[in-house]
Every structure is written in C-alpha cells, then in structure tokens.
Length: 110
Image (cartoon, rainbow, N blue to C red):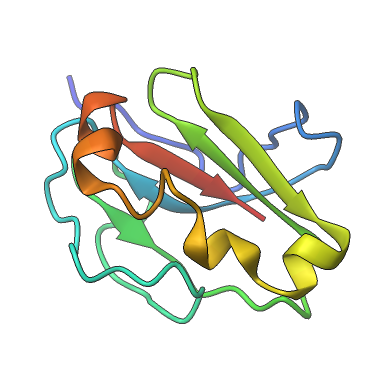
C-alpha cells in the first residue's frame, strides 16, 4: 500500500503553523542533487512519499522555514533576520547530500 502525505500538513513544533513545500524520501528517489533550496523549484509528484517533490514558495508568503530530517533527529527553524537573509540556503544539513540520505531524507516547511 502506497503512503500518501498531506501537502498542507501543519508542523507546530517550530511554533508556527506551516505547510510542507519540499519532501525528499529516505530512498532519495527523484531528488535533484543540484537543489538550491530557494523555493523557485517545482517538480515531482506532489504529496507522494515515494519520490522527491517540491512546490514553489515565496518569502513574501511566509516568515519562517523549518527543516526536519526524515528520522527527526535534525530540526532547525530559520525565522526573523535569518529567514530574511535566506541563511537556510547555506544550511550544512541541506548541503550534505550524504547526510540527508543517512538521516532518512528531509521535509521542508514554510
């Protein structure tokens, strides 16, 4: 049975009500290794947990970005000045493809 993911899942641990905008599964299937994490990419079967997918988002539409590893051991929220300066684009976890795979993929919420 194929799992389905609700695209507009609310992730409250960050203190914000957020929506899922990017998903990379533990298998890394469909993941673009040239990903820039900017929010201007749209690809993959939305809400499918078997392949990577992304929907576009704008910093005008949100005020924070939360990164959660697939195994839940990494969770980081960029908000305020860190979000405005897009520091998430240089996040160590997001820029280490091997670590993303070892940690079971990644979900990104805005």
